[in-house]
Every structure is written in C-alpha cells, then in structure tokens.
Image 1 (cartoon, rainbow, N blue to C red):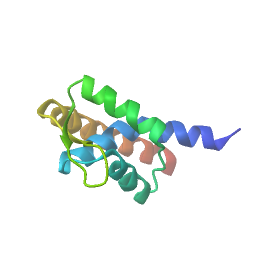
Image 2: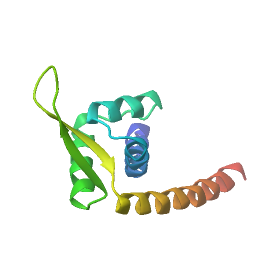
Image 3: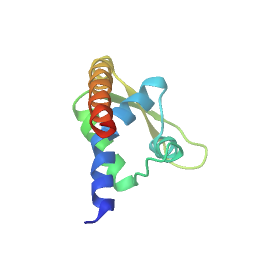
Image 4: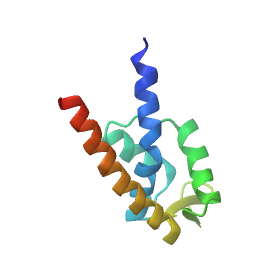
Length: 108
C-alpha cells in the first residue's frame, strides 16, 4: 500500500479549511498561501492551489483584488468573503468534531 496516496488525500481533504483560514486573516497572494502551508508541513503544489482558489472564488467564498507589482504584471490577492467566513466557521466546527472523533478512535 502506498501511504503517500493516503497522506495526499488527507491533505486535500483539509485544504479548503486551511486556505479559507489563511485568507481570512489578510489578503494573500497564492505563493504566500503556498509558503504558509509549507511552513505548517502541508506540502501543496501550484497545480492544486490555483484550481482550488478558482473554485472558491466562483462559489463566492473568496474575492480577489488586482494589485500592481513592482517586478511584473499585477497580482491577484485573495481574501475570504462574508459567505466564506460563514463556511469557514462551519468547517472549523466540523473539524473540531472530526478531530475529536478520530482522536478517540486512534487512542482506544
């Protein structure tokens, strides 16, 4: 059994919660989102993050602003919307329940 596949699926399952949490704090450029995820040992590649950002934007959970860059073209900075904050609150509550349930199972 390849554990890498299982681990990747576990990371993908919580990625939406993580991205909404990061963008809830401040407007963030995608590479900064990737850096924060990497700093927390959640290794995610650009090919995963950009489709997720697009999906969350289309669902109106994220908004973005174009910001001029000194080193190149304008950049999109993402921020959680009011609807995104509601979803984030729901996901945080669900995560707490899920984490508690899994912890109970693996400790017994």
